[in-house]
Image 1 (cartoon, rainbow, N blue to C red):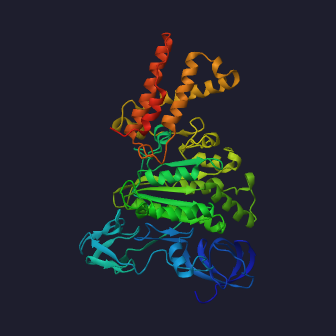
Image 2: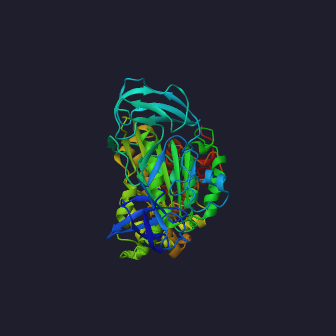
Length: 555
């Protein structure tokens, strides 16, 4: 890379055009200018290369050199990812800050994974064994919360002629040698925009339990499924995702801060290392990864950040773990696509977004799923994305197109958030296409009456919403006794079931069995009250007791 591979001819923000002196490949990583800013070739035509640069291009001028790497944008995979904080192209932000201070200079490069750290490697097989892609060679304790199997990379197979003995090794040290001379290390690299291979894709057969009643009971998300969470400013998208980070039943948590405000990401980086994981009773950082790309960072790196996160998620899925990827927000990612497309001079589609917005969203969401890995293990990757539609408009392109590719839609309501009801999920504007396997899981593991009781509760909430609309016109006092009772029970249901207190030890997370108990209590109160009213008596329902149930210790 010492000799220039071309000359820059034109600069438009983060889009640079160059005249290559040697052949370049589409999606090849190149280094731009004398500061060697990292970029990626996104178009080749008539002897010219178009490059999107992942850093600020201020100071780069026509005539500056272009350097080729001969490699596509690839993600480093191996021990050392957990607990890390990376930018959109997987530069380790903590390590760069230690080396350069609070302000990272342009062109700063550093391997994503520490090359000097020693890992306590334990072999899982002996020399002479035939191995195939996905087979486990050994393992290291990546963190006290998670063991890290070292597997044969995709596309590699052969007979092991030598394997390292147990002991401390670096990720670049040879841990196994095949009979054809190929050497294997703990470090793998994979193209960010290419799906990792699996043996089989499975139909989801269980829900991802989040501990949030309104989500698990009314709008469940399958393990290995996809969900979108649209909501206007101040509706609690980030707060809800932080709750999911802590309570969702996943082995590995990946949080992609895509175009969010710097103070929010800074707060997350500051608080995450100190949060206690309720699952392991250790630090949550021991099984989480943060991809940070704030709103003041180059938009091209923002566009890459989702694929960086999902590639890491697929890797841990292939190790046999259940992975949860949270992206905040999909709207900022789409805005990056729009800005890059505009600088490329492409013909805009609706609201200025590129015509390939839908296919770009599909390429991201399709990487979720529950699979049989190459080693025969079961693993899953679940994707939840927040969406920030302008003015809360759910008909705008990003929200509408995302709705085509997800089966669960959690719509956040501004009025609920203003009333301090969190999670502020609208039961009327949300939906979940619950797979049959998820219904079977609830019936087998929690209660055979789950589907029936859930459907009754949904009908009750819909009826109460219609009564509330009538009450706004004629007044509550003008309503019959039955409607007044249902309206009051609806208020109690919102307080005692839909709303959760993240600061209450008994209410922050609710198990499926407890969710069913609370739901049955409210439905029993409804039936009891309506029966008494039909007989001419008072409802006789203790609303305060119903609302207190959620904070009472489990028996």
